[in-house]
Length: 178
Image (cartoon, rainbow, N blue to C red; front, side):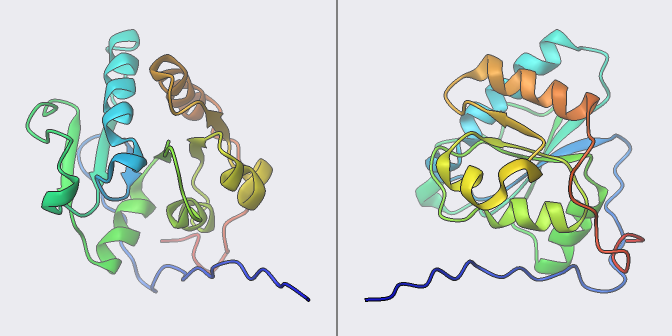
């Protein structure tokens, strides 16, 4: 007769995480190559963004599992401004997240969107799909909502994220120095 909804919890970054610092600033995609994550669309949108802003130094760093079942995305095509890190352990994940200028998650379908919560814990701006689950869970904490079916809108969202990375979530002061 009585239903309770208990949202997922999130871990904080481990103490002493050193931010990943390649020789360029980057946006981060954190997730598997499962088609529902829309990595293929994200790559097309990033190409579109780079075409509009060829002098922008930002790269796209992709972190996530590489299981055979999800290999619809060709990892050999985008080499110049895309770095494929593949699977990383938990400490490396927090390191890459700590060094990112922002998180991109334009999934078609999600259950919770843990990478968004993790990015918000780190004080990172987020561009995410305008889907009901993200609106319900994260609301105004997400900086830029985009249509995951619209490449131009996602490219616009990347630019907006980089230009206005003002954020309504304050990072935990204990973790802010990572």
